[in-house]
Image 1 (cartoon, rainbow, N blue to C red):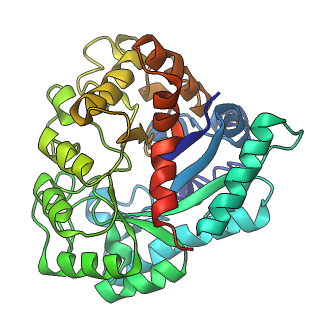
Image 2 (cartoon, rainbow, N blue to C red):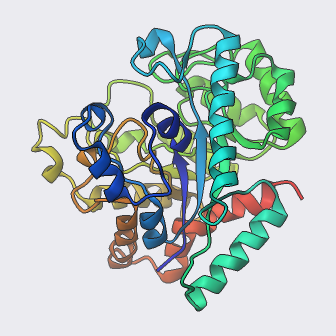
Amino acid sequence: MNLLIDSHEDIAWNILNLKRDYTQSAYDIRQAEKNTPIPAFNGSTLLGWTQYQDANAFIIFGTLFCEPRRLDNGKYPVLNYETPSEAHQCYRKNLDAYHQLTDENPEKFRLILNQSDLTQHLTAWNAHINAPRDTPPPVGIVILMEGAEGITEPAQVEDWYHWGVRIIGPAWAGNAYCGGTREPGPLTKTGYALLENMADLGFILDISHMDHQSARQALDFYPGQVIASHSNAEALIKNIPFNRHLKDKTIQELIERDGVMGIVPLNSFLDWDWRSHGGRQSLSLDNVIAQIDYVCQIAGDTRHVGIGTDFDGGYGVESVPPEIDTIADLQKIAPKLAEKGYNDEDINLIFNGNWLRILKSNLPA
């Protein structure tokens, strides 16, 4: 099996809002939540430590995420905000959750902050693949800030860098920095200042959730590494009514900047009207393969696409193709790619090599 890097998971959000314990298996978590309201509004979990091991998921990009109260309506009282100060404190809670998770469970999770961490982690996992141990290595976590509202002013990115954040996506919805999902608009003057400060420190910029206009402006302006951690090709999603995914022009510009985009296996990001088209059974992993292949055809190679599941990010097993029960089932993508003509090197790049290239080139020494 290929090692897997998943470039977007809302782990801290689930720990804080739903009290999910990702040191347990996904099935234990599901059983604990069986008679609660959680599956109805967030879906049944796709993640758990046992399933990470079954997936060979050796690195995930763990997000910091809070929702503006104007959109949240108090649904998740632990992680929402109204003022910049509240946003800052909310995002700090996410960060603290990762530190607590890794401090209390070092045998299961560890933070990846620099090249030394990455090298040690990769060495341990390669050794495990070659000679499996009774106790597998931990899952590595690279911290990604989804929505920059936790940064009260552009200069404050330096604090977040010292606190361990390595990737910043300026938008989720629209904000003071730029337009975002469902709330379009350009980069603002403050947004450009944010990008300047990010570039000075070597942050990776994530354009997922940025508006089409602000994303292209960022690609033109930002001198550092740019990615789309969890975005699909808009051209393949029929009838999608808002600005969530990437247009072909944006994908081409991302490729020209040697960026990588993580494909999301969420049904509504594969077919917006999937429920009226037959429900979950109307889709399959072939739809995910089509998204991956679309990016490869635009690029002319396999260097610019990976997997960014957004698992447990407001949805669960009920909203993914039927071949997927947990993250472990992402390994089923490999033989599907092989059937389409992708060789072992191509598949390895898609599963981990492209994201690994980004980390090796951009994490600090």
